[in-house]
Image (cartoon, rainbow over all chains, first blue to last red):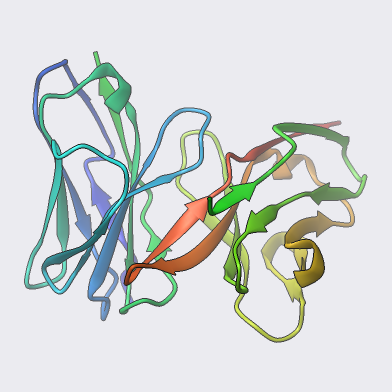
Length: 111
Length: 115
């Protein structure tokens, strides 16, 4: 059974650019949640996708958007990057509203 | 407001000493409870979880946690710390809000182990 994978592992962007992060769900899971972990903080819930529809959102601006595909993989898109967007972005998959399994994360640095 | 509190930002213990990391939550009902460990530059590793039943939960790497409803606490313990336990530890609550089941994390406790 393949666990949750994320790509890329690291990336560096400059302010104002756009970025797309990718997540492949664990086999059999239909729900993906995204979290942002700033340096020295705990992860914060960004949003969740269930069966290709957004199913809840945390306190993040609209420039954070996402997609979920028919195979339940997911993308997180961030437009107009700001310095404070530098963080570890974690993806977690689950079957419905059950235990979430986290990927290794993508570390984004915005210069 | 719903929250998870880890009162200790940093803890330093000597190798071989016992460890207790505190976690308190503020929710009306009993949520699902988790402890994760994170090494520098790494993702989250699940140590243990509590859903229901026995309030003393055993996890990996010799860790255990006890759920105390009366204190809204879920403290993590280890009887003898190893140098490799140095890392950051996060307590989390799984909670459904407006139809969305999400995790709410504490701010973490950084553990330093002295040789």
